[in-house]
Image (cartoon, rainbow, N blue to C red):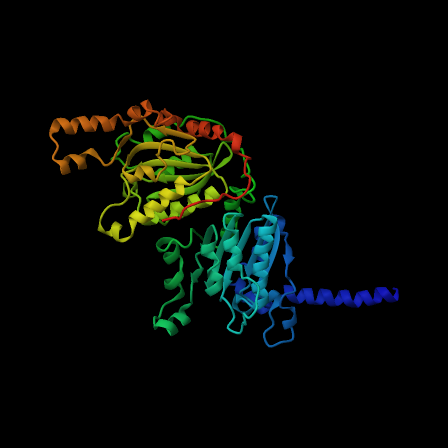
Length: 506
């Protein structure tokens, strides 16, 4: 070996030694204890996210100078990198709970921002996996670079953003979640602005982490988290599936994935599922599963605002965003939670030009004192604004009933940039049901009967004035949607950059 080679050998040995330190995480004992709880560690989580378990690490030498100090911090408790998901490049970062409780050091803070910077520059999706205690109390923020929250805010609508909460997440790290498009959490996870010890110190409240920010709080009540899964593997599989419906960025088109159920077909079972009587409930989720490509439906926020179904699906192999009233929950009436989840969902779908399909069957927005106290008018107006400013294709179908503002916020607004508007032949429309009008206005029997007949014939009256493009047999619902999507083929690859909106959401 030459003298030069010998010098290189020493240098490269030191390189590998320091690299090994960066990859050591919290050491064997802590890793073993962490694994005993049924969890994957940060590096295993990233390996599971990417194709073939392969990813290229970014910032692996952060924390390397802490090796001989009182608090060694391999990779500064945050593992980051990039790899492929279904053959497409994606960036990701995972908090490492085995190192200083996954807390955010100054080097890790810069690394988090670096991920957002690369995502913005290269137009790549970004996934965060959270399980950490937020910023370290010892951090000094003087003169630091912009933080990752600023980076995420700037990225919104440019690339898909996904957050997985896989343990207790507090403080700065937890704020990552509401800035992302889609958030999922595991049964063992919790997320909060401040953990139980800080809550006790600040306001004297004694509370467990589950009662403060567990799944029952954020999946069912607050809506901060969209979907709940059993464990780490399920969360990662969900993130991969969610991204499969989206383009890599706002400049591209969602991938088309034709399969064995991509062709037109009649659905005779719809006649048994959906009664022509609008007072008879049916499961909209069952209808959606019958209509879309087999196995292609991913519901978003199923436990929040359940009278409205929101989800991603494929029709003929193409990604679509579904917004559908569920008559089996409150007759399909839209409350504040349902309107809020729909507004966010439509904003995300619209940012990436995914066609929106509205399946309408509701008695209007929720009424009553509780609804008014919840701010239903503002929440419903927000949903109306979200659907109105869509620039992606819109397809509307009135299935049976749609009253008052409940029709408008479901995109039943003629000549409002819909690609297609359809109706079943037995629909009932109006400012409100005739029964309510008749009782309030004390209408005589003859007038009441005339108004009821007009409502019963709404489909033909409106189709006569081109307020609907077609009145369809329920069995042809899937085929009508495919026909509507076929109309949009000319703009399937017409993305010329991010969607820019004017106006303020209510």
